[in-house]
Length: 150
Image (cartoon, rainbow, N blue to C red; front, side, top):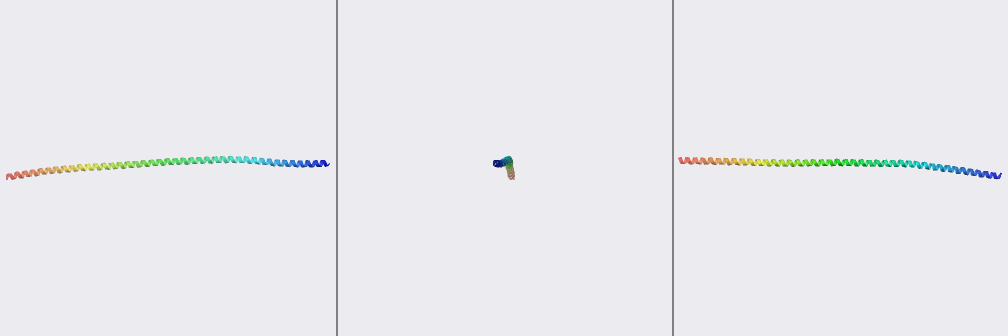
């Protein structure tokens, strides 16, 4: 019976060893399964993170595009305002030049009218002087004729 007890002990040891090996295999399989689940979870999280990063990048691009668009619109508005201001200044200069030309023309017209009036006055003075000279000459002739008669 000694052989059979030894065999029984061996079988018992082998069974324990197999059970330990099976427990270890199950434990390792659990670790592998856990590692696979962890890997899949990490892959899901990475996929989500990549999607979030892509969305954030897209949002940044959209914001940058909107900023550029607003800046371009502002530049257009400022350019239009500048052109309008320049046009108003040009119109003011033209109006001012026109007023200056009109004032100069009015002064020239006044000067011509003054010269014409002065020439008329001088002509009238000459006519009066000639008439006065003629009257005086006539009075002198009459006085001479009167003196002859006397």
